[in-house]
Image 1 (cartoon, rainbow, N blue to C red):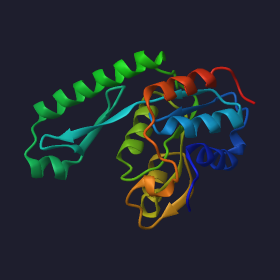
Image 2 (image 1 turned 120 degrees about the vertical axis):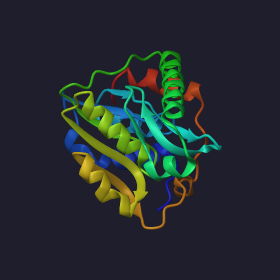
Image 3 (image 1 turned 90 degrees about the vertical axis):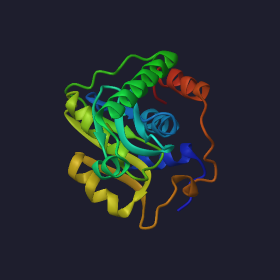
Image 4 (image 1 turned 135 degrees about the vertical axis):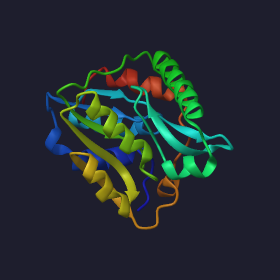
Length: 213
């Protein structure tokens, strides 16, 4: 399956989430930046409030692109123990990089002009533009539950087929448009998969506050 862009993917997800339309106890949270246009379409079509939730990977000391763990903006951290052991990474490194990532997320949140959403007692639909390894999404689910969310529903246009049962164990619901047995890169499933800039995110967040259709 090939999506035209994130907007089309979000519209298709909204169709599968109709049961939550106008639900007063439900909020849509996007994982920035790629999840924002997807979540915007869901929130707009279902007439739900939208916000963002940050999760960042903790990189290997030898390769900034290789993640050995992740941390949420609320401070929940998880690591890949095999990677940590294989690379000889100590706790001091993990804590230091986690603090750095939390500072970066706080700065982004300030730039976007949004305070941390209160999820206590709410159903949260957490959205990304695709799931590859699942580490960020799984941490987001755990962090939101730790923050008091009553339910967490995972929603993404595409995910690896073998990862869906893992997500289902952690989340209260999983909605995926297309599951693929050989998912390598999320971008392969989009015609337009451009890197969003901060202004696009700010504009969509501002637009989301104006209400639904």
